[in-house]
Amino acid sequence: MYLSRLILNPRTRRVQRELANPYELHRTLMRAFPENLPAGERVLFRVDVAPRTGVPAVLLQSHTRPDWAWLGAPGARDYLIRSPATKEFNLTFTSGQTLAFRLRANPTVKHSAPGEKQGRRDPLYREADQRAWLERKGQIGGFRIIQVHIVGEGNLYGRQPLPKKGAPPEADKSSRPRFHKLTFHAVRFEGLLQVTNPEQLWQTVQTGIGSAKSFGFGLLSLGPVH
Image: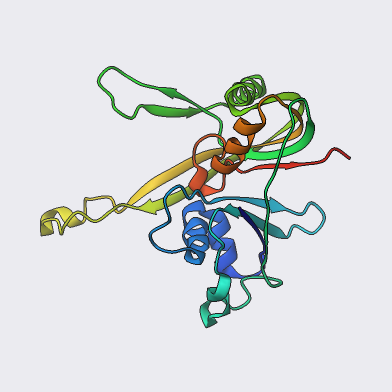
């Protein structure tokens, strides 16, 4: 596994535009990987904003080592404040171990009407529901929540181009939507957890937690308790 850290330059219009649209940020970050990802690859990332300076940093996790060479292209000038940092890592856990954690998630509940294949995901706005959601994820993810601080970051909006399915008739071009609207409810969880299943927790770290993983949610960061 690889972990990369990118310190973005908040003064550039490109960074401002991408922070406002998670699909655009996703598309930019994926330039560091092959177009056809290897089987089993799951790229996860999270944007952390320094509380004192307001400088955003992207933490990105992947099985494949990212290639950040494109950041040297003229179009990427001033995108970062400093050069990207990438390191290889592997985590091992023991049952009963206590760890500090951080997670930015999009907690939702899925509702399916009769005959629907996909169903609808509705955001969870109440803190009690968000905590219960995280505890359920822990039960199947190999950990138990000891304590947690929950911060609601509000809704995040964006738009994603719809796939092209052939050229529509001229009369229909103006009426066909070209973008899919994205809405996510961002919630940040920080606290302490206890390892209940080391193998399952490592799997959870690799695959992420919750929905909208391609758009900056689901990356579970773990560390020692200070």
